[in-house]
Image (cartoon, rainbow, N blue to C red; front, side, top):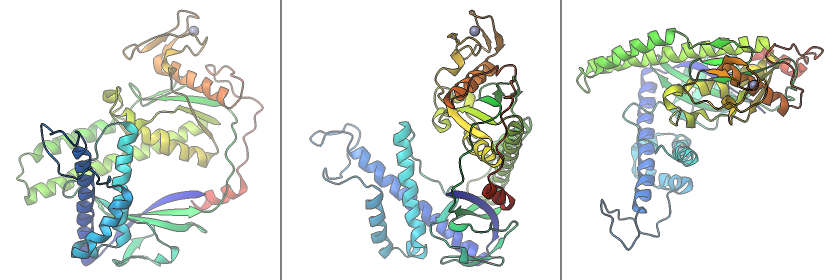
Length: 412
Ligand SMILES: [Zn+2]
């Protein structure tokens, strides 16, 4: 099963835009209500039933079950009967909002902290139609349930044979977009491990370091854009809440955010292609960046963009380019000597790896990326040959493109 997400601009008319904005606001309220319901229930269970809480008292009977996904979904159907605003929204859209609350709580449980936040006015930026079909798109129009025909700019055609599954409507600073999830029912064989291997270590000082000794810094233009952003955000406090000037400034800030996201994506894609030019196998550490972003390494890795690169952009480009992508155990990659395997303890402030056993000296991140490459090769069952010297993996032919995939790549 192959799923692609294509993004297109849509141009709703004034009336449709009003409807969509109203829907976003209703969705936001439903979201906040569902979060509040769950948080009240949790707070009411914080002390024993036969004891008085010192801070506050929640009067939720002891036998009230936890408002989980199914209960909230059922309650939603009830609530709709008395609310014209909720009735106005397509029912599956609201059900999906409950699903979003559910996954936010599931994620909190998984990482152990980070209570889902309430969304402020204007912070709810997208809603999803979970069931769409190809017939919805005719010419330059897309038919959205209850909203009607909306003009869409199909700047690239929907690839042949793909089925339209879902459509997410997104509001950005630059306008409205639709993200179409397209699915194709095919089995494409996995790419076998082959060719030269490189290991990649991300974060901290450099954006990434490869086992060939190449170190890529964070691009400069981000600093420039971030400075611009700070400047605008500082001005925000002088503007009266709810004023037109504040709204305009917020719009400007939104545009800068969008620009940063676009530049980042461009940088990621180019870098991923460059890495694929050099190798047949790419290995990375198996890290959960969402968890790391606020954890121990918080200050250094605050860029969640690293996770986006390692877990989304790089695997996608590798798949397209027929490069094997593998993850290896991340434990202690920076504490091992890549050349002799000795344990070399160093804390975060030590930037150079120098091994007392074999005398190898190299930048810390390069050393750990070499350890990653070594672990990757062991994992795929190949002999470790001189990664540091850039062994060419002689005699290993690149596999030819799978014919179906080649055909696919022609259209996607
Ligand atoms: Zn050593």
